[in-house]
Length: 340
Image 1 (cartoon, rainbow, N blue to C red):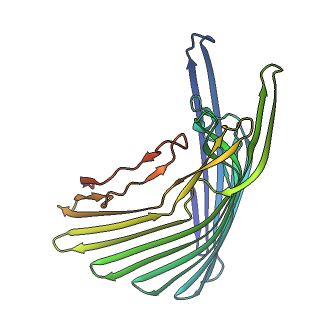
Image 2 (cartoon, rainbow, N blue to C red):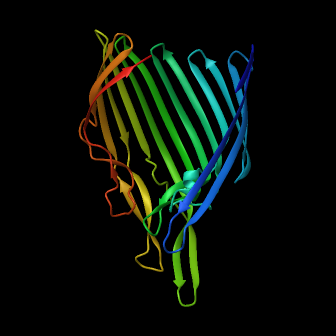
Image 3 (cartoon, rainbow, N blue to C red):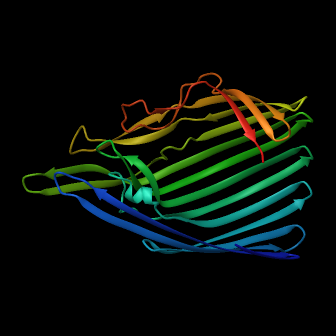
């Protein structure tokens, strides 16, 4: 990465390159042993300008170029502008194009990879207001819109095995609120609130018939819009940090997330295919910990994660009937950190 600066100008140029390769051996008594080799490389170059137009206004245009051996070329321009309206209030705007190629896990994970995936791409827009009305208080609110075409998501298939698929369109509208408050010399508080209205639009199979005798098939799909899978509408986090005498500290934090949904194809009425909805319920988890600084370089921490032993899950299971992947209950921990 190369950086150059002047009085009202900063320039950054960066390069990155990746090369992935995979050698797979399949041992089979039925179809014979096979060996296959996959590889890909990606070259990226990006540049960013920081332009200080006035003492109160600055802009940040940038652009990135990617060349992927499997998926071709892609340009990702972004533009941001920041304006200090007065000493206590800032306004920021940004817009950018996004791109992500499928990973090797997405493409080639044994049995479940999907080599037909396309890269996901989209646009992101945000307007953000920041204010610090007092030296010990910072507040920010952001309104954003993100749209992603061909989003890559691992979804359950007919055989109850998960496989990455391109979701035709994902749209997220949201608002984020952030507060940082230095309440007193010995206590700080941070708070973040995020509300999302996330929708996905995808081609879903509604009829799937195969005639074994004639060796013919008929598959009918319809474009369906639903609440986005895996995405809670509301997340809230809050953290209190207390500085105590004798280099002791105490931390208590809470995280809340509203329910999230996932969808499972139902072939019980074959050849008609329907979609069942599964829900992970909302949860509130509290963590608490004490810490003690020893000899300026060592920190001893002891505490409890999931203080109230809440039963919750973040990851859906393979089928609509299973019990998903539960998170740990109450956990006691003791840790040492050494800073060199």
